[in-house]
Length: 216
Image 1 (spheres, helix red, strand yellow):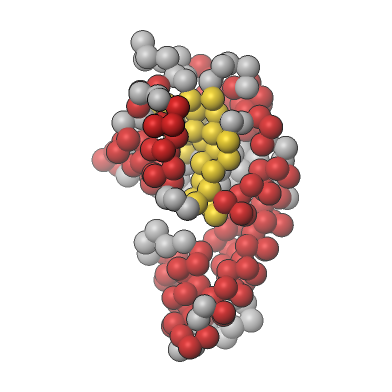
Image 2 (image 1 turned 90 degrees about the vertical axis):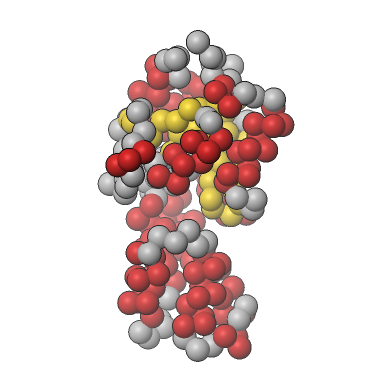
């Protein structure tokens, strides 16, 4: 049996119940702009992997105000980030998140939080919950989540099967498959697993995770 040496956790929807908050915040950030909500809804529904900056660039262009880019786009992005941070700071954690992080600290495994949220916004949110002291590192983007996890594997000299990724989205599972890592899915209301590539291990309560780390 290969021993798990590192656990890499996603943040939104995995440790904190924040997926809907992040979606709603796009509309809150643009509520004073007439007519943009339908376009924004279509853009978000397309799930095209755009980050917040790219989304607001597109909104600015759609408004016919490309001459104001990047100033308007940055203003909207900053407004979005402020709304998000306040709401996420006050959101519920996914069931078992704090107990899991505390328990993993005593296993000898290195634990990382790795998110698609920009670094400068992710770290203050993690620090607000006092989780930063329970993990080896907190990493946002850039680089991409895929590249970041690949870098961590190389930096610490892990074999791919010594790494357990934990996430709540198909994109997380796709990264694990591409890198050859093990994976535990976190089921919640935002879950949209691909039926063809359904994770073998899925939990509703993160306190179920420790016993799964020792399965071959």
